[in-house]
Image (cartoon, rainbow, N blue to C red):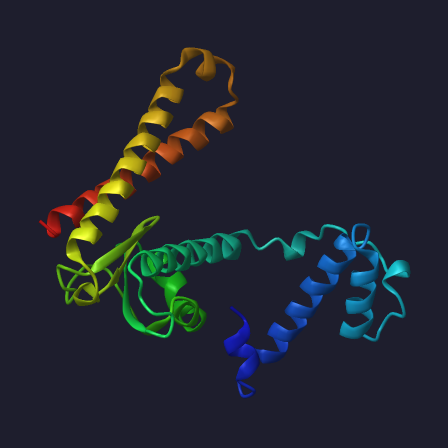
Length: 228
């Protein structure tokens, strides 16, 4: 994700990216040191020259100022989108070198903003020739292949490269999986033994899961209908 910023020496955020990358790697090395001491010592002394040895360095401690909860959720959303796109490309035997125009569709402004701000590395990781972010499906062909994300859909107009029947089968499998997930959560929430004993936070999490699965199921069903 950070590579485009590192490779572009004119990028004003390059130094900040390097600093963050170094900080994260060094803290990770310290946490790993008790398990692989020789490896971590070698990398630590090569990576930085401020300290002579990792063995005498300060153990990492939690700092609230580095708890970027909002940004973490945004990155997880993009990671989910990339993972789903890669899974589809693999299933359809699309060449790794092939770049595809990719549409991000969401009626939520905050979702569109996340992909807009992360467009550079999202395009790179998703192997997109162009990333178009919009609030509806206008301009997207009906046979476009889709990948669902929370509060949005990813569309790739390369149905001409794949077998439409196989795409229907893939969506049918995804529909079947989501139906099972919805049923599982509904049964859990219908279980009085579970509801009476589980903390309110756990119950709310299960309700949120049900809402998410139902939304994804509706999106998949819509795509199946559009393919006939």
